[in-house]
Image 1 (tube, helix red, strand yellow):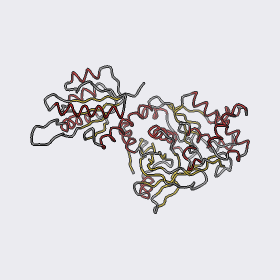
Image 2 (tube, helix red, strand yellow; image 1 turned 120 degrees about the vertical axis):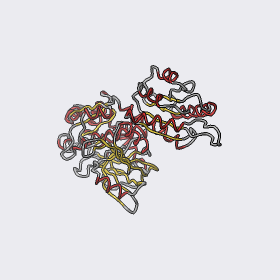
Image 3 (tube, helix red, strand yellow; image 1 turned 180 degrees about the vertical axis):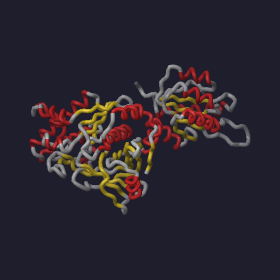
Amino acid sequence: MEFEVLYLPIGVPTFHLESAQKEFDKSVELLKRLEPGVKVPDQMLLSIDLLDKFLEGKNPDLVIVQNITFANGAYIADILSKVSCPVLLWTLREPVIDGGRLRLNSLTGAFSASNVLHSFNRPYEYVFGSPLEEEVVTKVRATIEAARVKKSMKGMNILQVGHTPQGFGFGRALDAEMLTTFGANLLSIESRELIDNAKCYTDEEVEEYLLDASKRIVDLDKIDSKNVKDFARLYKAYDEYTKKNNIKALSSRCWPDFFTAFGTPVCAVLALLNDLNVPSACEADTYGALSMYICQYLTKTPVFFGDPVSLDEKENTITFWHCGTAACSLARNNKACAGVHCNRKIGPTLEFGCAPQEAVTIFRVGKDSNGKFRLFIASGRALDKEKQFLGTSIVVQTKNNSKDIVINAVKRGFEPHFVVAMKDVSEELAILGNFLGLEVERY
């Protein structure tokens, strides 16, 4: 089903309707610019009858409730009784303060609405200001995007390939939790299933995959030829499975199985899947894969997944690293080079430092000590740095003090895998957390 946003300009007709009409027209113009498919009424909804008529037959994913003038609590109660989606409550600024008539009285209406929203125990976002204010534009846009990604997770398939290694249980997902909290379907298979599929392919059957990989990865021909052919077999096995089962994100066991049972790592396969817009996490970290999906959906570009491995107080940076699963398109100077695994000395893996980014977001869907979901969010920029260690790396200069972020995140018990998104989507992520009823920790 298509994503649907409703604009509900509620109020009563006893205020200055000429002023209200001007705000209505400007609001419609803004919303259509931000979300062309937004459903807007032909007129201001200045009675509950008009409100009910507009709501009839609609099943929105977000409602933007604007006090176009004052409206008592009966309006928002009526809305909440008919829709179950997230709400953005919008207060308009008084257009004129001249000692004369109160034109809109929108703010009092917002207090009436918020009182009812709290009584219903419904999560909502709030913005104050006119449609022409940049802060309002930013907030409305972020709220729409958060509602959109929430909708996208409903019914999506996320794949868990194999089990987490011993000591990595933080990434192990439960199907019931994935469905009830995020709306996603968790599919699970053993890694041997994909390994067995890969073993069955002939050289001719994987030729197109090898050709595709050669266009993306530099120096692939310098890796042992048998390993390269086996990598192409794995690439085909993962690609076909994801397409056949409509997989939107996946996590995969990697060590030791793919070294011991297959003789070739899965690292580069996951890197290429990331390039193909299938967010893919290693070490079977399924909540890491979900984190990747959320950020990739918001930024429309591949994200980095890895461990925080180094801290530099002078540069105010945190370095994130992993063995070589980052999307080739993230590489500095477009040079995603082939390499061998830093510990096992078998390839192919990826070797590069990530290209600089003016704005990035560090993110994680995690759990607290009571098993409740929470979100980690921090902002910064990615510096232009060569690879820091064997594998792939990105160096993030954080907006806030990097050492404080590390110390507090460690003390709060966050998981050792994080996502770095190539855009500042911190506001969208915080709003998403609110809409999902999750604790949000911003650093």
